[in-house]
Length: 113
Length: 117
Image 1 (cartoon, rainbow over the protein chains, first blue to last red):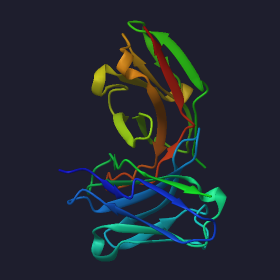
Image 2 (tube, chains in turn green, brown):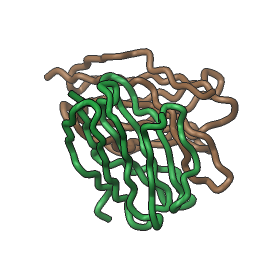
Image 3 (spheres, one colour):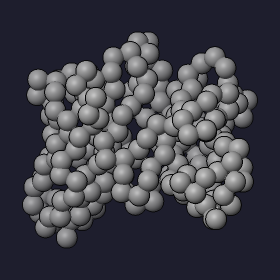
Image 4 (tube, chains in turn yellow, green):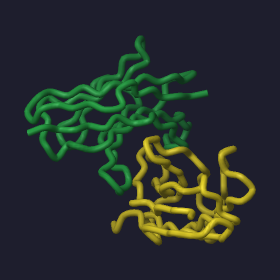
């Protein structure tokens, strides 16, 4: 069990650029979640997958955001035309079938300048 | 809609003193309840969780929490705080799925714990 891995740990980008983050869940976990956390706030749900199917998307997830989980393994979260308001920590988590506990990754901190 | 309130933004306690962090939730039925801890720049670590049964649950690092349905509360406690407990603590609530699987969670805004020596 190597835990949930996120890459990169930090990303600085200019406004208007596209960015992509990757999450590798624990191998036997079929669910994968994305959350966003801004300074001084708790994590906010963005979206989650069961295997390769995206089951729910938050209204927070504008059209500029897209997430995929091809083959039900790793997942990517892409933000197009980044804005300063996108600056946040993006957290990924995974959970196994029939289990009610998540394991979180260490997150990707995005700074849009 | 579900929501979580952590009324204390910042708490300072002396090492060795007892600790109680408050959490109140709003949910239509009995939810899953969680406490997570986050160190600076890190992800979240699960301390403990409640789904059913005994309303006093034990977690890691000597933490416990008590579910009180009548008060819609799930307060976190520790009898003796250590300096290494300094961190941000988040309470979270989530729906109960038939399969028993966790689903999306709603988090509170967190309580920052400072420990003085």
